[in-house]
Length: 69
Image (cartoon, rainbow, N blue to C red; front, side):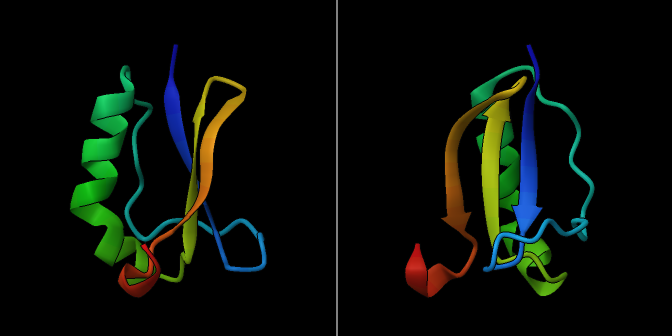
């Protein structure tokens, strides 16, 4: 199983992240990673993120804007 992030603009358009994530083996690893890099992702043009396990959406879109979190 692989946990992956998708990054989008606020209108749902997919964007390439400023920091390229790996495929994570656990949800906790994926969440720790975004906790470390969310500011870089936001500055790079992403507004929100979606976490999926393989092809199943787990949650999101989750805003990367601190005032909306």
